[in-house]
Amino acid sequence: MAGNLKRSFNFLALFSFFSVACFALVLFYSRRNFMAIVPETHILTLGNKTFSGIVKERVAKLLAKRIEASNKSSEMARIPSAVNITLGPCPDNPPDLVGPLLIEFDFRRTWEYVRKEVSPSLQKGGRFKPKDCVAKQKVAIIIPFRNRHEHLKHWLYYLHPILKRQLVDYGVYVINQDGEGVFNRAKLMNVGYVEALKEYDYDCFLFSDVDLVPLNDRNLYRCFDNPRHLAIGMDKFNFNLPYKTFFGGVASFSKHQYLKINGFPNTYWGWGGEDDDIYKRIIFRRMQVSRPDLLTGRYRMIRHQRDEHNDPNPKNPDKLFRTRWTMNADGINSLKYTVKNIEKDILYTFITVDIGSPE
Image 1 (cartoon, helix red, strand yellow):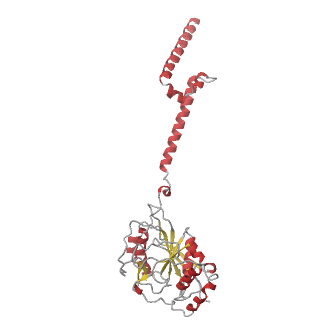
Image 2: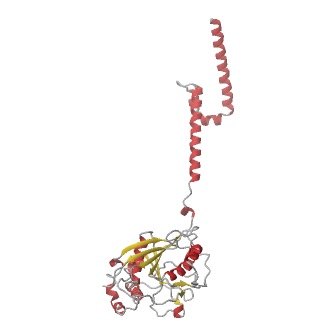
């Protein structure tokens, strides 16, 4: 019995010696790779752990780290990179502009047709952003409105494609006066300024009559160093400026410029006078009016009868003599209105408001 145990012990000792020798050979030929797994000091100092246990532990930890790193790489591959990180600013002169345009007001054109043609790439509320560059300005386009749906259809049909080609980050806001009281265009434009800023951080505000469409897409719908009058050559005036201080139809203001003149007057009820008041505000605040050239600034107007409850107001011209003294108290800082309804169409944001009546 004792002899058998001695032989077994010798056999096991020999086997152990042989195993260590083989492992030493393997270690010798793959020392660099192995040392990345098992540091040399740990090979020589086993402590209370067996050698094979330490090897298994180190290999398990290394595999766990590699699996974790692989999972993180897969997760990062699934997360899209932020778009604006790789996009540069949009060019000052967009490459897809065509210049002079053929504008025809075909009254057989339906709303369904307009939505089909114009809505691709638009976001709800009449919003658009260029996909290949970052627009330098965020432009709110504000239309004072009442009972002019046919004109709005033509405006949207032509202006959305123009604005897309101009690479504008924009939204269209139709500010609809509730009821059948006396119309107040300038006050509606003030409302548009306030309501647009509730939705987006706009820094440029372009105010447009609903019946005016530009005849040249190089007439850029954006803001400039001074307040900009864009509609300087309407067909109704034989494509000329009717008088030097004319400021009607389409104009743009940066946020700073708009606030500098305290917005627009709220007291011009009925037709006439508010554009001249706005021009005076610009001059009194020591700014100048910027304009495109007469060829670029051409517009076509949709012919129509003057709206009901928008007759010329004989009181308005006299107010122009007091603009210098009234502009600080009559404007965005005195605006009062109530929102009745907001409709989000793919082509526009339609905001119906109660702006009161003349005092």
